[in-house]
Image 1 (cartoon, rainbow over the protein chains, first blue to last red):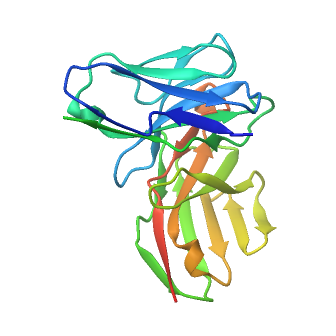
Image 2: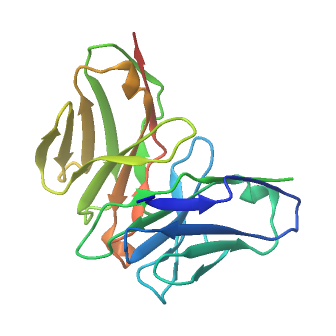
Length: 114
Length: 114
């Protein structure tokens, strides 16, 4: 049981390049999330997927797109990377049932945009 | 604007002492409150969740919630050097449109001195 996995662990991009961050969970969770964390700041929600087939914007969605490929996988795409997107990206998942539930986080992807 | 405020620290306590971490939030309608621990370079992990006014204890950790004052705290008794980490407060805001969205504070860095 690996929990939440993310690839890659680290990536360097040049401004204008594109890339996709991958996330998968093996806990049969319905809900999945993408956050970014910048130095001295808490986690900010980029996009989330309450259930398979649905996605919604979070607090900071500009410059990103997401795909909920199936129940297990939720990817985050940067179409044209900018230095302001240098950050640590965390994927999380939760059962998605009931009023509120624990979110479990992946190990993170460290992205540097030059 | 949904806000979760924490003292950024750093907070230093001697080994064996009680560490007290505080968090305030802006939305009176918030119902769910969480404390996450994040070691340097690692992902957040849930320590405590609390939903009702009062205290909730789990081992050396006690979460305290006062909804009237919009205040939640985390006490760590018999602090150990291994407790040195950043502690993130997270709150569910009903105005998000989904009970599953969390808003995080910027975190308090705790150092436990041997």
